[in-house]
Each structure stands twice: as C-alpha cells, then as structure tokens.
Amino acid sequence: MRAEAKGERRGRGKAQNGREAAEFETDDMDERIIAALRQNGRIANRDLARDMGVNEATVRTRLRRLEEANMLRVVAMRDLSAMGFEYLAPVGVQVKGRAATAVGEELARLERVITVNVAIGTHDLEIQVVSSSLAEMEELLTNVIAKIDGVERLFPSLALKVLKYNPEWAPL
Amino acid sequence: MTRIALDELDERIIERLGHDARVSNREIGREFGLTEGTIRSRLKRLLDNKVIRVAAVTNANRLRNPILAYLWVEANSASDIERVSRALADLPEIGFVATILGRADVLAMTLVENGAELTDYLHQTIDKIPGVHRIRYSLGQNFIKHDYRWCSLVD
Image (cartoon, rainbow over all chains, first blue to last red; front, top):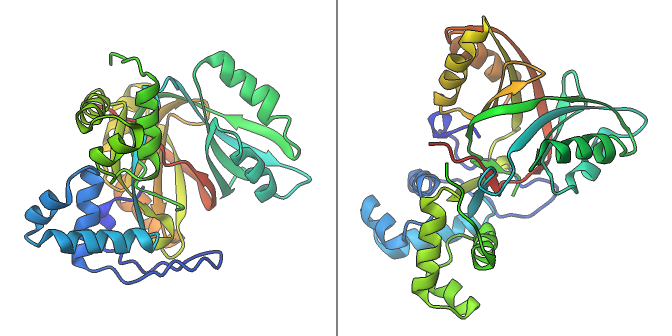
C-alpha cells in the first residue's frame, strides 16, 4: 500500500518461494508506466504513449515485460460496499497448539476473509473479515473462524467508516 | 451513495477484468458474443457508479522484505478522531484507514521494509498529526492472503 511518494523502489525484489519470475531492474520509463496505470488502469496504450512522448510499441513492450515478470498486474477491484459488504472487521487471532501459518492458510480459504497476515506483536495473525450483515459477521466469527483448529482467541474490531482502502501491491 | 443493481453480465465483466483488466472491450465482446459498444457502456456504468476501480497492482516482493505495519491509533479525545483519520488518509504512504470500534480509534496500514523505517515514519510523520495520542502497532510479516480484488471507492 505504500505509495509512489516513498517510491524510489526499483524492481529489486527477488522471486520468492523459488518461483522463477524473471525479475529485472525497472527504469524510469517502467516506473512512469506503473504510476500512470495506478491512476487509470484502462488508459489505452496509445494515450499512455502520447502522454509519455514515446511510441505505442514501446509502451506495449514495456508493459508486457512487467506483466511477464509478474511484477505488475492491472486488475478490476470491486468496491466492498457496492458489492454489498457493509461490514469490515480487522481481527487479531491468537493461536495455540498449531502453527500460525497452518491456521492462516485455513483462514485464507474462506472467501469472506480477504487478508491474512502472520504477525509479530500481540496476536499471531491479523486478518480482515467482510460480511453483508452483522448477523453474518457474528456467524463467521463465532461459528466458523472460532471453530478452526488452533484458533484460541479472537480480538475483533469493526470498521465504522473506511476512509481509504487502495491496494497498490499484493503477493502476485 | 446510490447503489446500482448488478446483473449477470456486470458480474461476468467484473470477473473477467479481475484477472486482466488490460483486455480490450472488443476482445471481451468477442468472448461474450456481444458488441464492443455493449461492453463499453456497461464498463462505463460500473466505473461511473464506483462499483469497480481498474488500476495497477505491483508485486509486494518488489520490496526487499515487505512488512505490513498495522497502526492502531488512539486520539487525544473523541472529538479528534475524525480529524486524525482524515489526516492519516491524506498521507500517500498509507493505503488503508478506517475508524473502528474496539481495538483502537483508528486503524491505518502502511508497508515498510524494516523496523528503522517504521520508527522514523512514526516519529517524523504520524506523531506530528494533531490529535494523535498514542500508537500501538503490529507487524504483518508473511502475507498468506491479500485479496487485491477488493477496495473502497471513497468520494
């Protein structure tokens, strides 16, 4: 989620988990393409090229290279509330008798659990749960998540108002 | 915000763009057996009504060692919560801000590469926001799931 402001980050990350995504060092032009597509993912290559003062083939080639290296993806993101998910709960999970990662992987399989992170701090996992009603949230927390093997205690909170939620990165 | 009703075609378009949103309207039209114009007008409606947003997502592993910092912020007083949450949302480094019930007054999230970077950011930026009383944080080190198909489109 860290934005461009901090963003003198060239593509120096390594492919993790032995995945051979052929990463490469991005240059200024790659970064400008990424920045433009963060603003508007549907901009035509032609318009993007014109804005950047280069030809369309250059933009197309650069973009394909970024996508093939698994460094960037342009996707449609759905607005939670427009899709009917009015409730968002950031929940801390305390795990006992089982590896936090194993519990996290089981939680990740639930469609209503949109993020799962193994955390350092008070709780072993931090997750975000969405629901269309308070009753559904209660059901998820009490009868689904709480019953997963290894889940010891839940520390839920509930979003009153989401002021900002712009995923800019993800494990791809 | 007024909610628009979505039909099956809308859902299919959203699903199609969820994997790769650089596909042209003509290509989607061909796949669905519909005209380019139909796809274009449907998509415009989805975007205009803030049902979806189409944007680039970069791979988190572009960062050397990405740590997601959950900042649990308490305000000086209840009347400061709104101002604090707005100030946090204005920071470009912060990707998520919500006022919450329960664990704190406000939850904000940012991505950092190490503890020193987080400490600097807390001291030099967050602590200076008027109305911030105290910040606790937890650090997410291993992204098991981060479903980028969701966002919030706020006016």
